[in-house]
Amino acid sequence: MKLTFFGAAHAVTGSCHCLEVGGKKILIDCGLQQGRDEHDENALDFSPGYIDYVLVTHAHIDHSGRLPLLVKQGFHGRILTTGLTAELLSVMLRDSAHIQEGDANWHNQKGKRAGLPPVEPLYTLMDAEEAIQMLETVEYGWLFDLCEGVKVRFTDAGHLLGSSCVEIWATENGVTKKIVFSGDLGNEAQPIIRDPSFVDEADYVVMESTYGDRNHEPPESYAGALADLIDEVFAKGGNIVIPSFAVGRTQELLYYLREIKRDGLVQSLPSFKVYVDSPLASEATKIYSGNLKGYLDDDAIAVIQGGENLFTFPGLTLTQSTEESRALNDDKTPKIIISASGMCDAGRIRHHLKHNLWRAAIVFVGYQGEGTLGRRLLEGAKSVKLFGEEIAVRAKVVNFKGLSSHADRDHLLEWVEHFAPRPQQVFVVHGDQEVTELFANDLNQRGIPAHAPLYEEVYDLMTNCMLAKGVALEVKRTTGGASAPSAAYVRLQDVSRSLADLISRSRGRSNKDLAKLADQIKLVMEKWE
Ligand SMILES: [Zn+2]
Figure 1: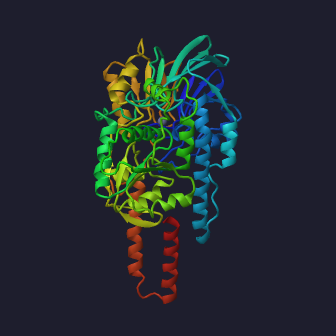
Figure 2: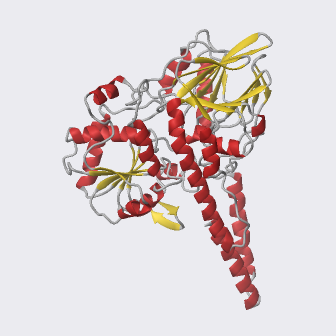
Figure 3: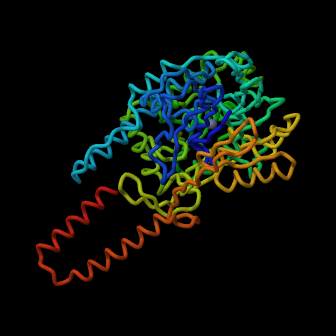
């Protein structure tokens, strides 16, 4: 009985763990890696054809985004998840395929001019459709036989609609081990959905640690604090651009903005307009407005029973077409634009940043992973490159804390300390490099054996010992931030010095050669812009 870590090892994205029991291979999540450099091909380091089952904890793309790739590369097993996760996946995987196809197109247009062979998208819409067709649903609390010797139960992780912790009872040679995968654990102060549920026992726990090093500082009233910020920016005539995860965070924002409107909390412009400019967010909002019986918290149920829609209010527009999206930049009235992706690495938000970075307020309401454009902005980058243009950052950049879909340090500890007796080993995943180590140390000091596995670590669950240590993956570093440059970047700088040297030594060569050299350098630059 073995556990291998194929993602979110010393990192926050790419969740993918493989449990092997009785000759069956069960993947828990198959997420996309985001904002990474050295390993950003998102290749699967195992043969999908040999995987028998995938259990998906929730619909966020860093937990689900490689499902279509898995299917494309020969997976024929079963994929199980909760009903609402399946509904959300049906829009999210299509959207992800759309981004993959768009990225490949963009590269190919550039590559054509440089005479490069075409690249294939990671996966296509057809692959995504196929993966969606394969989704089978279960509900919270059902205890079912996955296969001989393996029982499974999904419980509410309180992180996103449909999100789950997965409990697995695995039996091999008459010995049963219980393994619990936390998925992403929710924040207790989160609106709309319920709080995460506790799990009583486990031999092994694989748990997230996104906020393993800090506690949230929620404002006394989130709606009140957000309204004050909106008032301040609108009074100066500026726009507010909010990069937001299309699924989950956007609906939470709409929930609070409905309250702000209802209570007239923005005095400078009470009739302010709000645009959700993300087709994915619009689709997800429809799902959030559907039948959520068994998934909502008490406050949300009370609002619905009062006859109100949780996510609709006067002045709200869900834009669809790219023309509508573009028109937002021509309209000079102060407004709120909510757009995806949440970490600014893809999607329409990049257009809005391009048009607003020099004047508006950019309000971050979610976690920004290492190596993402969002993190660079938060770290105070003076300028950023968007669509080949260097854009000066003159906007007020605000990190609006308090709204988080992840449990903070105290709540993570509370969740893991609930297990009785203590687990034999806790595997700390899904956190930034230093945070996973720190949180694992924290657990050890509290008497809970724990460590943060490296990529491709293999662990024997029968003997409770590590079989293979795994490897450390490099994380993309940016030049503008406080982080040290990677070895690859230092090498690039060396090469650039040699190039400058070559150019100075080329003085006196024939004009024909100089023109040829200039053309070649230009070609390389165009390729990498
Ligand atoms: Zn998540």
